[in-house]
Image (cartoon, rainbow, N blue to C red; front, side, top):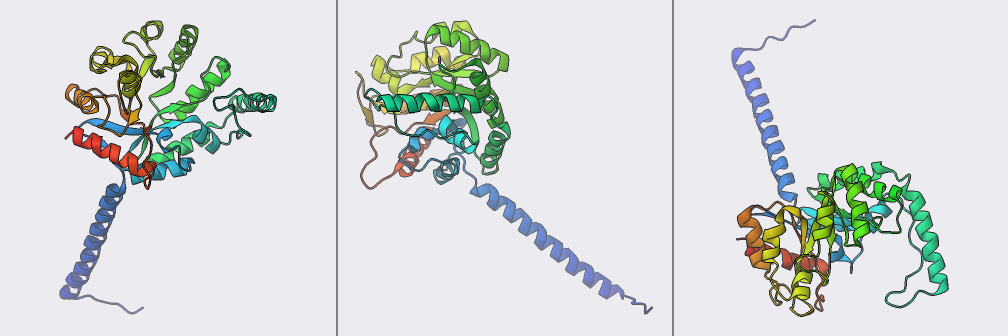
Length: 324
């Protein structure tokens, strides 16, 4: 076998080439890592987590893949995801036909609705939680955290098994809390007890029925009962600033919806045109280091020539300016 003897110069030269190659590889890998990080959205602004609820994109296709793309396009890295999209991704049966949409259901619609409720209740009792974990990973890999989910399984008509499913799916999604419209006192007691078993918060959402004491009973029933405060609805319903309420109840607020409305049950407005002190509220969160996220909820009329993604970007910029 022929021997190959390297001179000192040849050895050093070959080592230099290898080192150069390694350096170039390291620089390339580092650059790729930086680029990957730069591609990921970020809406943590001066310590305040700005998020978005999927309802903001209701005028657009709303599969979980679509919703993730919208978050990335809007440079938002946190989301409150609603039940339909997540459940459909997990394999739930789809609702067929319509509801009443403000009018009484026809007998046929009522039958179809009852049939659907039975089917999805049955599906929930054996729902594949791995699909919710898969959904969480999809979002996490893209740099988006799912911090809350609003399932359609926390109502008075839902069984305890369905409510357990809602919390278990929430755990699989990695959320800190579930959200639901504020029900009657018997239901907040029921949900609070089940939440305690799962050690997960429930954030109760209210519309213009909000008052400074609306949530007091629910909060007294369980330490796992909390507030999903909508400052726009609060302003429209009370014709007053939500700041004193936030200062009093900040430790029980799980997340906050941000929108702009007028006093006296006034309409939704583009941000900055209503009576809601959005900037003051965001500054309050920043200055007091409150940890709950502030959720963009696009509810004003989308102008001609625009779309939901463009308007959410405008809202995000408004929040960024308010927190600067």
